Length: 113
Length: 109
Picture 1 (cartoon, rainbow over the protein chains, first blue to last red):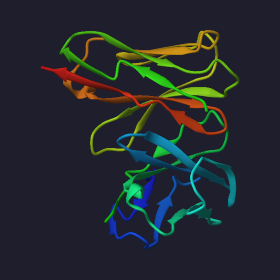
Picture 2 (cartoon, each protein chain N blue to C red):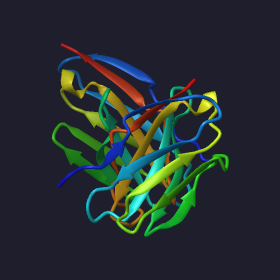
Picture 3 (cartoon, each protein chain N blue to C red):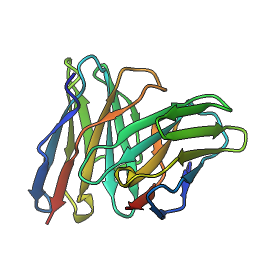
């Protein structure tokens, strides 16, 4: 079974630009969650999508948004990039229930200059 | 704001040593406590999902226990090997995963 894939793996943007990251979950998984990893803050939850609906959201500004398609693939968008958005963005997929294991992708390393 | 604390922050041990780490979380309603291993340049890898008080899970040389009443979980590694070197994360599962900052383990040959 193929694992979670994320594209692109690396991205360099400048302040004020916007960026879209993509995540393809494990086949059959309907839940996709997004996390931001920064050295100072650790792994922080951004949002979760399940069956094309946002089921939960973390404490991030509205510049961070996402969506999920009917095939469970998910995209995350960050508008008006700031230097502090430089981070590793990870997505994770799971079957459904709250106690299911989340399987992580390799991440997208975003650098904002 | 729910806070998940992990200790120690880092640990250096010799090959063959046994070691353990602690994850402390708020003792309130939650679905599960997850443990992950995160090696450099790789994805976080799930180790255990623990749901019940007194739950104990084992995978080879690694085991974990959960005490929901007092709000902590222990992860044990018996006979550490260099390939165990990684950051070990716990995550408190409410309707989202709240991660601790991890324990960074280095095992020297």
